[in-house]
Image 1 (cartoon, one colour):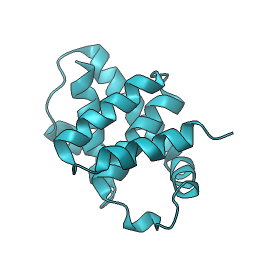
Image 2 (cartoon, rainbow, N blue to C red; image 1 turned 60 degrees about the vertical axis):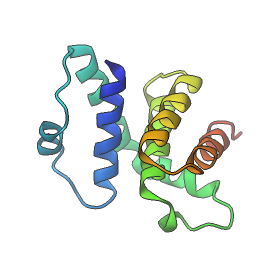
Image 3 (cartoon, one colour; image 1 turned 180 degrees about the vertical axis):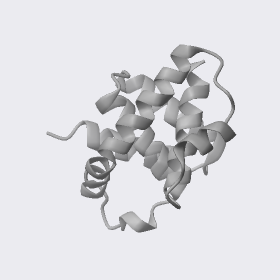
Length: 128
């Protein structure tokens, strides 16, 4: 199920915010994906995230007002990275990627995080 692939990608992105991680070892420790399409989707997210992390970081930083990038709650940052990667590089519809990230925020983050995450993602994808 794509939800499992997406959640696994989120966990790996989150882990990578703290240290350089061995993607193969980390992937083995995550819940095994049952379908080939889900594995492909997971791989696509991770490949595109790793190739475009600095670009995404710069876009996020450009939309932070009165807040330092380094002070962002790491769970929220990982969810923002996930949604932006899906929207900008994986062809996931904006509404789907945002909704899925907000659902993960309900599970892993704080009550106030949804508004913040939605605001940053919307600002980045609506920039001209």
